[in-house]
Length: 534
Image 1 (cartoon, rainbow, N blue to C red):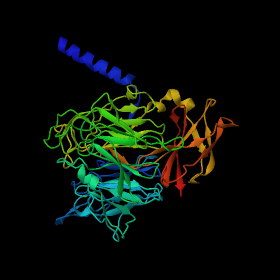
Image 2 (cartoon, rainbow, N blue to C red):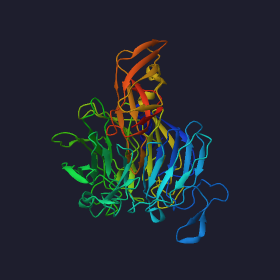
Image 3 (cartoon, one colour):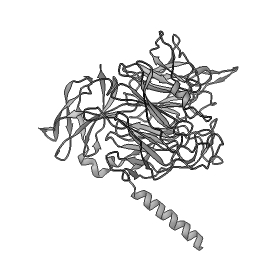
Image 4 (tube, one colour):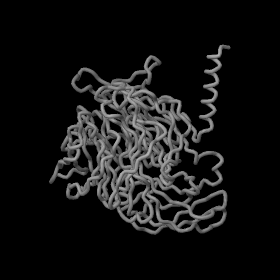
């Protein structure tokens, strides 16, 4: 054996050994979903809506017989394949869904009754409003394209955020420096939002703005490298935040953002923005331009907020930031060079990162077990009710391309990543949520019952996690609310009764369905769905 071959074997050995020692586990859930999901959302019936563009050409998911879509601009051609499917998490079976208008780079949000609102897109979907009413396994719910309402302004690359009253604000989009609402507000239509135009550059780095509803009731809106506090009741900017240095962070420069868990008296909210691309990478089609490795963190509700910056172990574009039931954040998917766009990124970033917000600067990031499947442009990540993260999509091509001749072919596999809290050695401290009310009103004092194998010492958390709409490295509507709880009361037989107080209002937690988790010593239960009512 030559010295070169020996060196390569040793390199592979040590790489595999290091990966095996890193926390987290990967598993393949579905070998071929039929579509590559650009937009993904988890419903209260433990099903997952997977959605791609509709004008991408035939998928590998055939529609039922006699169902076809006419190709816009070419009425003699038809597409008889699905571009949306429903995944049943219990059986891992797929059912094709029918959606007709184009959904490329659209936006979405769950309504208080659990309906998935979906808005905009390209071509014939530019001003379209759609609904998906989830149903129990075995029922035949499907997409509804609304005929009696449409957007006031076409929305392509917009962001949706549910508001305290249960309505939805739709922010921005390409050539759409405005906001509007669902249900449509006929008296105002689309309202100009000049901030989006002011931060737009010649790369359009104001697209898919990061929108977070603060517990004050105002919106933190971040685009390019700037943020404002926006009062949507008066449509006025009430605060300009400092610039986040380093480069552009929004589409197409492809960073990501979360608002950290709300807790305590809910008076404080902190926003984190991580990654992005160097300015000019998109404009000049620089596939090898190093991704930004910096993260900015700001207390958005502070009296004199400033960005605190720190560096990730890897530069990353197109990373998805997923809030875990514990309040920690997973950063997963993406690449280390290039930018968003068709075939404009390279060097997949296979290592997930765990961001631990309660640790001091310099100790917040933990590198996790790497993936084997690159998840590049048009991939998604969503929290599941059992605490795993669902990974879907990745298609950096204008159309579906399969085969080893392409560096990053269209990806139809669906995977799950299990954080370290799901490792077998933690099973005896993992709570089981036995009883929780199905419906809870704001401020209500209620009780839950949880079971734990080992005796519980100290507090157990009860945390509410929303089900966001994940697309283009940002989960629209994502939030985690830690409830005020009392010390668990022993019920006997490993059971504990916990008195909780529901969120006080829709500013802290908008009305709708949440995954309720019991968390003990950093280990979450399987969630039960709870409807929070106003």
